[in-house]
Image 1 (tube, rainbow, N blue to C red):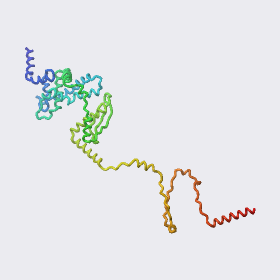
Image 2: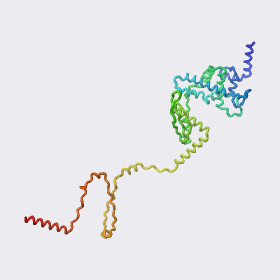
Image 3: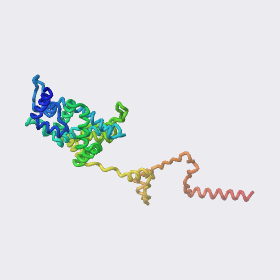
Image 4: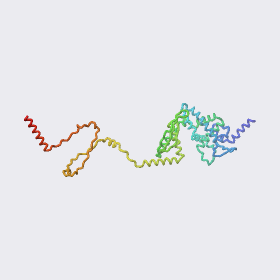
Length: 354
């Protein structure tokens, strides 16, 4: 008798929630034991439902639990699937598989989004709400059937039928190229600067980079390589550009200032060849000699301007001697010539007498 009563107690909620049981079976691959857990997992906070004690009744607590379970389960799966891969790759692969975007898409593919209860005026019906509901559903599975059931659900239902784990793990969205494409299209100056190089608690190298747009600080990114840190910084900066219109305004204001300076007249750069020629031209140029005829009247009246002749400097002062200097011969007067002739004749006469 008591067995029949138990069977009837099971059948009663099943009949009452037949559509929900059927939908959950198609998603999970098994019938729930405690349907109330799954109903709570599908209840968005916008509904504003409260229990008898006045506490909110929604899926936020189950979402917290499911997030932790997913990290452990997917980490286990990734560790066994990618044998020999380093920690950085495994961490990246797990992050992609449990990302809000991936879980939101999963919820849509599996029909979880059709079961979520939310207020009609809510603007939160998006991938975030769907992904959160998926995490809450995993939390419900854990409380209803345990950790092994969560592992089987992810391995047999999700990774075997819905998601290609290799495709997700190796898929790389090049956020750096996307940011570069945006900056080139808008003619915005883009720079990456390395900030820090260190090691994490396990001794693995860690790099930190930052984006600069028109000299303005963008977002920082950290990774196990410079490339990964730049990718993360680019991703965060792209999100900032979408969220903060003021940041875009400041970038274009800085760009306007830069281009205005570039358009102003700039003095031409000096001619290097000409400068070198001037530097090597150390020979003193002499003025060409001009035949001048100075009249006696000009000499008499001292009308002749004196011309200063530059004295040539030499680096060989030590080698100069007085022997190099000679006096210019002076013309003899008539009286001096006669006196010299008489002296010569007188000397000749004395020589003949002797």
